[in-house]
Length: 141
Image (cartoon, rainbow, N blue to C red; front, side):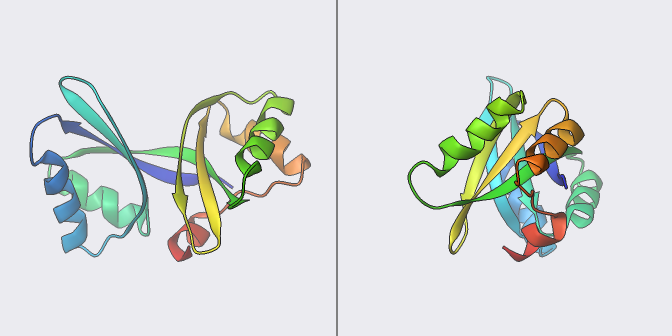
């Protein structure tokens, strides 16, 4: 099942990222994973949080541009070759990865994948025995 990633567009200047994290912190939103990409003028923060609805509501109330993006999250063994194995499954299912990032848990690594067709990818990967995490499981990791 896909999870909702929160994407936030930020002006690329000192303090903007900190302003966003302060807003989330003040409302007890826990960031579980985060990726930041930038250009000269703006940055895009992509993150998984414990409460997607709360995060996007308060960010919009504070005049941040935020939106949902469905992504797939898979737990992989924290050992050499684990990423290669899951990427091989994507290749065999002919699923294109637009971008990915990761976070470490207590006993596993977690990979977040943005793909062109989430439902198709999930179905093809499930047929290979891979189960994606749910929004509730992300909040507990």
